[in-house]
Structures are given as structure tokens and as C-alpha cells.
Length: 547
Image (cartoon, rainbow, N blue to C red; front, side, top):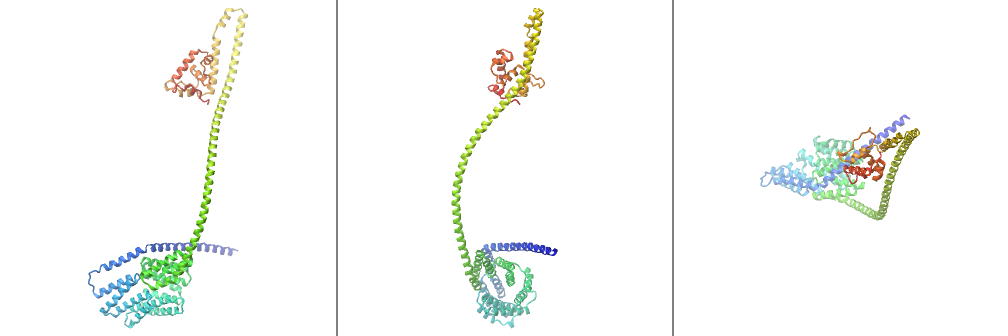
């Protein structure tokens, strides 16, 4: 049971690690494709820079008198510049060296020029001419270095023939011939040289030790610089080795590195971009496959390589057919999509029209609701105002009923006491005292004072901030003094208090306060003159709140 859990856990770990590794590999390939696409896009500028660099070399030689040795060296330099860039120019300069070497009388140098010309002819697909040219070279007279070049070219020529003879009975014959010349190179080339390492790797790969061949080239690759022809060749060969092991990711990665190197170095005699287009075709990425093959075909045409042109021509119909079929499918999908979009657009228009109609109705309903809400709000305000008035009236009523009962009780009690005193004086026949008592204003004044005291107390209980609010309506130098402990009003404040209670008639105010109507009128006029807003003063008094 424990062992089963451990195995399950390990499987989960391997699954997660595999997923992370796959994602990182995909990210690496995507980054390489982005780099390659950018270089393909800017290839015209790269080629222009290459031409400018060559032009600098040729321009610097104008009006210079060169010795045969200097001319031979210059032609070789220009040949190297044009080697993978332009077939005609490379052939032109190597032909010049074939002529120059006759004056030099150096068989080894002459053989080197013929070997280089054979390379150019082989690349262009002129295999028979290249073969005859190599046959004319006497290998016994060659130096070790030149023999390595000669065997390399023999092996390369048979390699190109094997590429053209793929899927034919002659393929293995040319492959075996290439292996033979690789053996000869391995016998004489320095073991740390590019020729030895490259031929050793290709030799053992053909013998079946693909893993050792891959390790050998991968260890050697860091010594090369991207953008150089040897870097492009080594990475392209590594891609071939990995394809034999069905390691598709590594094959694709090295083809991308090789193609990027070709683009950076303006190497138009290339092969990796075409092989990448085949991978993309099998994957179903017809657009990119078509673009890469078109670029590879243009490179072959600009270079003048019949071999690469024929290789591109072999797969061009397949990619073009697949690309056209994909375009047709895409167009069909586009037409269907346009039809669906048109239907959706029509439905959308209908929906929009219907929605606008609903919005209009909703807007009208909202306006109606808004009007109703405004009316309700107005009614609510009126109701709230009425409630406040009723609340205030109830409070005033409660306060004044209590005060009225208390005042009435006090007045009745005083009347009873006065009646007793008058009855006693009448019974005792004290007429002078009775007359004096009847004539006295003291009981009346006491009653008035008691009335004022009850009125003031009741009013200030209902309107505790009345004097403060009155002062807000008066100018700064005409305000009343506020004594919170006094608990009484002046005659002027009593007049304002009666106005607040909606008693505005001068006669009624005079009767209540036991004053003359002239006095009341005078007080009201003076109060208005002290107000900030004279016209609205009494209305402002009426709006003073109870709390």
C-alpha cells in the first residue's frame, strides 16, 4: 500500500516536471521563431549591408597596382565573401585566380583554386563539371592541407548527389562514397580541426553511433560564431542527426539556429529554411511554411543555386497546394462567419430598435414616476409640515391646558378668599373698609402678574430658544439680553410670543396683555425697525421652531 502511494506520488512529480519542461521548450522555440521572423522581415537590409561591406573592399583597390600574389589573395578574399552569397561573383573571382596561378607556378595553389571552383559548380548543381574538374587534380602533388580540401570537396559532391538521389537506388551509393572520403580526411586532418571533428561526427553517425556524433558536434559548437557558414552547417547537421533519432524538438531547434545564422550572415546558399518549411507543412502551419519556402526559393534564385532551387521546387507544389487549400478553407470560414455576423448584426439592429423602444417607454414611465414622486414628496412635505404643526399644536395645547387649569384654580382660590374678606367686612358693617377693598387694584394686579408668570413659563417651555432665535432676526445693537435663569419675558417679547402663536390683531394682543392698542402698535413698530429684514420680520417670527 505504501509502495503504491510512493509510485503514484513519483508519477505525479514526473508529470508536473514533464509539463514544465514542455512549456519551457515551447517558449524556447517560440522565441527562436520570433527571432527568425524578424530577420526574414529585415533580410533586404542585411543583404544591403553585405553588399556595402564588399563594395568597401573593391572600392579600396581602385587605381592600385597589385602583384600576382596580392591579386591572388584579394580574389580569394572576395571569393570567400561571395561563397555563400552569390554564385556568379564567387565563380568569377575563383576563375580569375585560376588564371593568376598560372603566373605564380604553384601547383598547390592552383589545385586550391580548382577545388574551390568545383565547390561552386557542385552547389549550383553542375555535378559532372565539378567531378571532371576534381579529376584533373593530381593528388600526389598536394599538401596535406590541400588534400583535406580535396577530400572534403569529393565528399561534399557525393553528399549533394545523394540529396538529389534521395528515395532512388543510387542514394546509398553516393552516401558510401561520401563515407570513403571522410575516412581519408580522418587519416590526415589535425584532430582538433573543424574538418576532423565534423567528418568524424558525420562518419560515426552514418555508422550508427548517432549519440556520440551529436555529443561531438554539440561540444564543438560553442567555438563557432553564429552568422558564420560553419556554424550554420554544424547546427544543420545536428538537426539531421536528431531527425534520425526522431527527436523532433531538437531537430526543429537546431534548424532554427541554423536558419537564424544564415540570415544574420546573409548566407543565401542555405538549406535549413527549406527544411523548416517541411516541418511546418507537416504540422499544418501552411502560412508560415509558405513564407519560409518562398524566402528559401528567393535566396536560391539570388544566389544562383540550381541544387537549392530544385530542392525547393520539389516541395513547392505541396506547400502551395496546402496553403491554397487552407486559404480556401479560411475564405469559406470567413464567408460563413460574415454570414453569421450579418445575421447577428440584423438581430442586433432589431434588438437595438426594440431596446430603444423599451428605453423610450421606460423613460416616459420614469418621467411619470418622477412627477408622481415629486407630487408625493410635496405631499409628504405638506404632511410632515402638518404633523409638525399638529405636534406643536398638541404641545402648546398640553402646555397651555395645564397652565390654564393651574391659573384658573389660583384665580378661583383668590376670588374665594377675596369674597370671604368682603363678606366679613359687610357682616361687621365696616363699610369704609369694604369700600376701600373694592376700590383697591391690588387683587387685579396680582392676577395679571400671575397670568404673565404662567404665560411666560408655558411659552418658554414650548420655545426654549425663542429669545435666541429672535436675536438672530435683529441687528447686533438691538438684541435682547438672555438670562436663562430669569424665566420671564418682557412686554416686547410677550407681543412677539403672541405673534408666534398666530395672534396678530393689535386689539386682541392689547386685551390679553391688559395694555392700550396704541401701546401695542408702538411696540410692534419699534420691533420692526430693529429687525434685519423689516418686511418679513413678523413672518420670520412665526416660523421659529418649538425645539
